[in-house]
Length: 317
Image 1 (cartoon, rainbow, N blue to C red):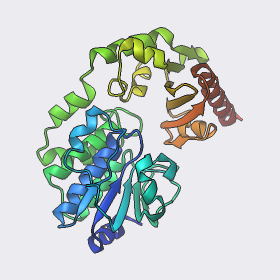
Image 2 (cartoon, helix red, strand yellow):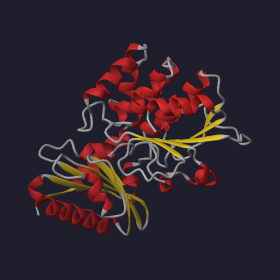
Image 3 (cartoon, rainbow, N blue to C red):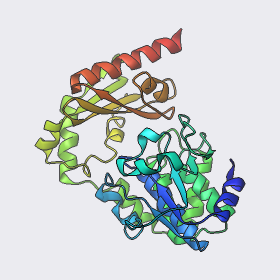
Image 4 (cartoon, rainbow, N blue to C red):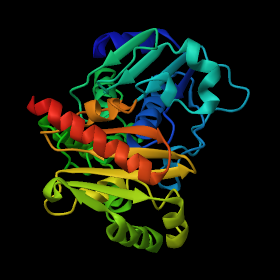
């Protein structure tokens, strides 16, 4: 489907439930909140499915928008979700009846009855913005979470996925009169003391490979405890390591529980992050991807270095 077909689809239906992915970021939450407000502006009934993984950073975009326990949807829509495996556990009852998926991931698995995919967009928020423009529904209530979606998925417009279209979308959202200064301060220029302690520990334990161009940073449960850090403090920690001079590709290894680690990989143009993580059963975008590895932090480090080495060798051959 394209934007016009998606707009027609939404006009013709009602009683919406909107799904986000587990360990949600600003893009999935921002898109969900914006789409809900857009649908309500059209006179539709729309709610978000509660996401219990959401950190405090994004709570304000969920307040008053989650579906009551007795809500029975007629139309189920997912936003920024590439596969059924990325849905949170409470979305299990809806896995076989997702009517529409709106997404920008090249790894999209086309699990929904209808899919609108534009994999060249930096954020799913760019698609939902186009939808709001098509439906003439760009209000402040829509624009605020959309700005969060677009800005967080591009690191406040500094990641390599940022395009001219990303900036055009941000400009249109700002023109609505949103408090973008407050949003930028909240999401990009505010850190807790626990976050700063965690960053200090990362600098002490990370390792450099390939002449200092590849950085791998383990974040163990012990480090989280030592820093007195919570999930909120670790939000988007993957972006931190890539700020080091000389580093082109960075991987953070989050120990979620003993024997299970989540790897987040950020890369420059000469290494495909999605293809690298696909070697370990994950996926994502060319410049940012992730995967889950079963084993210790040390074992996960060897896994991701092996995948990086393999992908680099494959690119040279």
